Each structure stands twice: as C-alpha cells, then as structure tokens.
Image (cartoon, rainbow over all chains, first blue to last red; front, side, top):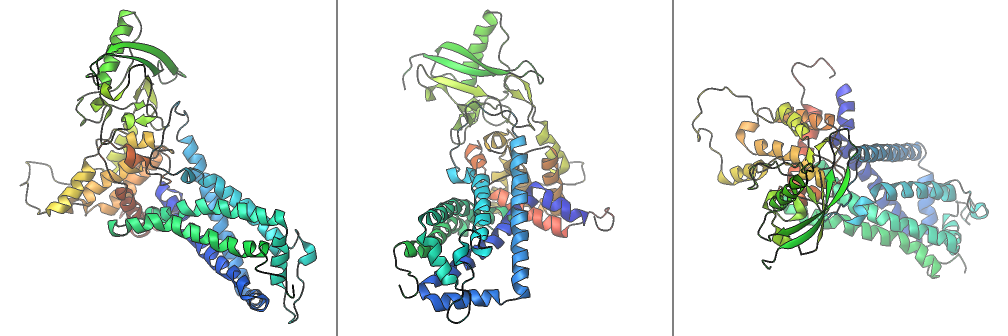
Length: 229
Length: 261
C-alpha cells in the first residue's frame, strides 16, 4: 500500500483528497439543509424527521463516524498543504498583485478553520445540549424529542441567531471556491461544461446560504412560531 | 504616447550571492527613451552604475524576442510585467509614465533560489524534464516527418501546450509557488500526440513526483499562472494532469517494482 500513501501525499493526490472529502461534506451539508427546511412543514413533521434520524441505530453511528473521518482528513490535508505552500515562498514579494483569483479563494484556510470552530459550537449547542440546556431533550405530545421547539427557542435568542448567520456567511465563500475547484482538481473538466462549472460553485453556494439562513430568519420574523403561539 | 524621454524611480532587488539576505535598492534612471525595451532600460541603468564604479544589476536575458524563456523579472508585482502574452524582453517603456516608480524583483520560490540580484536558478524545471519530458525512441537519422498521421486540430492542441518556454512565470505568479502549469504543459504537449501515449502513465507519475521532490507548492486553483503565462497556456492542461495522475497512481505499476509498491 506504499503506493497509495505516496499518491495521497503527492501534490496532485492531496488535491484529490481535498476534493473527494469536500464533496462528501458538501453532500452532507445539502441533506442537512434540506432537513432543516422541514421547519417550515411544522412541529409534527420536523420532529418526525428528527425522530427517524435518531432511530437509525448503527447507521447513525456509521454516518457520524464517516463525517468525523471526512472532517479530520479534509482539515488535516488542508492544514498540511497550507503550511507546505507557505514554505514554498520563504521570501515574500515587496509588491505582489493578483489579477485572476477571487479574494475568497485566498481565504480558504481561514474560512475553513472558522467553520471548524462553528461546527464544534454547533455540536455543543444542538447535539450535546450545553448552550441552552433548558430547551434540550424535551418531549413533544407524541413522546418524541421536541427538536422543533429547541430550534425555535434557539433562534429566538439574538446572539445565537447572529452567530449562525456569521457562520453561514463564512461557509458561502468557502463553498463558492471549493465546489468549482473540485472539478478542476479531479480533472472533471471539458470546454463544453467549463462555463457551467465556473458558475455552479458560486450559485450552489448562494442557494445553500439562503437555504440555511431561511429557517432561523423565519423564527426571528415570527413566521416559524412556538407550538400554540 | 510621446517621444519625451522618461525619468524613472526604480527599486531593484540587489543580492550579492545565494547566501546574502539581499534587499531593494532605489535608483533614479534618467532620460530613458519610450522606444527602449524594459531590458534596455536596465542596460541604461547598468551603464550608469558602471560609470559610477558600482556593480551592475545581474538579470537573465538571451534572445530578447520572447522565445528563449531566459528573461524573468517580477515588475510591479506581476511576472513579465503582467502584459497579456508578453515576456519581459517584449515589454517596452512606452507602457510606463514619466516619473513612475517601478519595482523589479526576482521570481520568488524556494525551488528557484536567487543566484545573484534578479537571476534565479531554474534547474528545478530541468529535474522535472529529466524525469519524463521525452519519449523513448531509437536515435539515428531523422524519421519521415509524416510517418505517423496526426489530425491538424490535435497537432494544434499539442502545439499550444508546447509553446511553453519554461520561463517560470507561472511559479512566480502563483500564490503558492506551484509549478503545475509548467509540468502539465510539458505532459500535455506529448499526450495530445500518438508518440506520447506509450509511456503516458509512467511519465505523468514521474514528472509530478519530480515536481514535488523539487519543493514547489501546491495548486489551490487561483489560475494566476494562466493569467501570467507569456504563452497563454490554459489551466485546462492542469485538469488533464490531475486526471492523468489519478489514473497513473491507481492503475499503473512500474514493471520493475516489487509486490505492493
């Protein structure tokens, strides 16, 4: 297997690692966003969705393990590449101008690490229930965890709402560069599709940003309300 | 554009040798014709320095017609000055205004160490070429030019990649000092042709590995290389290399390798 180690450690192989793990995380992020759009379907539907996910048993732990693995590899490889790239130019230019790249493409390591910090905060909030323990693991009339009420209570708090909006504003540029880059990195490119690929990254990133902020904003605007409110 | 001679303030990177720390030194260059080329402006500066008994500025140049790949220089933060499809030797002083300040620095990459002033050692590119930038063929008298038919469009694509002059502007422009555009161009010009197919996977693996061994940075898809390339080589060749390297890594095995390698 030494050939596989040398492949994933090579400059091109490391790009493939970033692209494949990034695609896996993107797939999760899309499903996660669609799930939370279920907040618009009401308390019963959303709690049913949450209850179904919690009831997956071994599958839930396989998915969690897989996600942890993807996050660890994506960040580990990214940090390694960023440090190698710094070392590749020990003496900086006095004057250095870029013309083609977009600003957010240069922020990738920083937006990535800030998103990691957000993920930890997000897990502490909704998975470990440490931010608002008073709303965590309450039951609804059907005896299921009342994820709907926990969600509404969470985003009724302005500080929490703003922290999530900021995090999604960081995810937006990360995805905009990441999605289009994936195709270049894996070599899945052709002049017939280049225009589409270049626009698809930023477009999907904007759609996901809007999809993610819609339920919290709806809570803030009282479109999504507490049961009986 | 006027014919009025230009008076310029020029900051030039001066470095005695590879070990010297180096630094930017300010020079006033007076009476430069707008018809002069950029390198002729440096020639004028050097004549002034020699007259004053100072060490002239060392810089690389050879053909001065944009084809040899010797000239370099990061001019005001852009390799070759940032003019589309133009090498430093093709830049003329009519692009600059009277009284302008110009910064001139060498290519910056750990794999391109400064030899002196603006001259860098680009032999890292040679190590990549030696790893696979050729086809294995019997030498002897030249074969018939058209023995292997190649469609015109395909030959054109190979030629577009082969236009790379190996100057290193892609590395100099890249935020990460990556050499992927160079390496990918050298692979693509052979892989668009039938002659390059036999050793395609071995070559891709060997040249990418040589590029990594030389210490170049990693591509993060900014495409500054494509913008800086004086021969307008497309980033598409990098995508082609990325695809080819996966295929070579996952499916090609050197016949001489031991089991599991």
